Amino acid sequence: MKTIFHLDLDAFFVSVERLFDPSLIGKPVILGGDPKKGRGIVTTCSYEARAYGLYSSMPIKTAYRLCPNGIYVRGRHKEYSKYSKAVREILEAYAPVIQQCSIDEFSMDFTGCERIYGSLFMFASKIQKEIIDKLGLPCSIGIGSNKTIAKIASDFNKPCGVTYVIPGMEKDFLAPMPVETIPGIGKVAKKMLNSKGFYKLEQISSLSPETLRRIFGKYGDYLWRKSHGLGSDEFHFDYLRKSISHETTFHHEGADTEYFERILFELAQDVCQQLRNKNWLASTVTVKIRNTRFCTITRDKKITPTDDDQLVFQTVINLFRKSYIPETELRLLGVKLSKFNYLTEQEDLFDNFPRKEMFKAVKRIRDKFGYKSIRVGFC
Ligand SMILES: [Mg+2]
Image 1: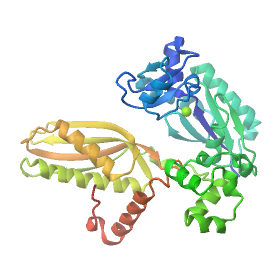
Image 2: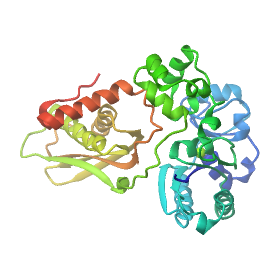
Image 3: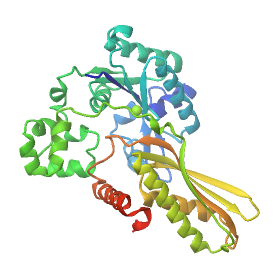
Image 4: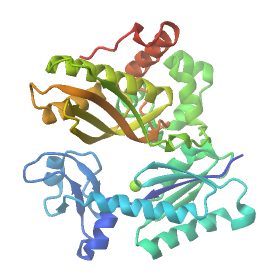
């Protein structure tokens, strides 16, 4: 039986903003797009703003209508990374095994550490206090027997909560919660479950796997496992590798834009396949362009973590079109993916199911008949 901690910084971006501008403390603070122009979404908002019904990913327009007197901030993103790193450094001093899930979430394996740290519940409070004292950032910690249950527990009593789900109590802990509590049950899955009359997890966990399979087909087993609080307790480190890239060198191929874009299409597919083989997601895409005078430019863009050819290719082509001067003869083109996350159970399995299945099929065909035997088209 493992003991996993999931630490989630409370309204992280807002907390950092408040370090720079204490006048924001106690007020509804909203980070994201420009409310006057009405473009963009809420990336984070303070608990005071949530009291007005605001939440992350809400259109900024709606947020402004609900909370016109809130303080709207654009955010200083470089500082967020710095503070995230500082939190990680504090945690690394204690956790024998640590996996960063996002800029403000960390999963840690403390199995067998009671002898060193005493009561792990008390120890979690000590970590919280240290992060507040040293960095001024509040966080919540969930403790459980696997990563999923620890994550749900970290969300249970926010802000500044510590929630310990005693092993064996997972199912009871989850029972009264809405179905969408489970990471991986997104909008589409929630709608589907609700339409069949399933709102709370106990409605699922009280049924046998056979019944669930009859109702949901192959999702039945997944739902049974999740509603019983089962989940992965494995940690992955190999994604510390820095990047995956692929380049093509030209020998007097002229200056045909369409040809170059076709090459980029191939390169994007290749790096995405490598990415999926490792079960990673990338959040930075880089394009490298070198002309025949050996002048090289690289352009990169941050994207929502993905392993999807289409998203990567769109980013690649946008970067290329911005930087390439038509009629220029090229020597080399390259595509690089970096800033990896491990594909976790948080991914929306249901909502992305058809594409995931397609990519699995593509991989099977490539394994059998070679990489070039199939191409992925875009719509
Ligand atoms: Mg957070």
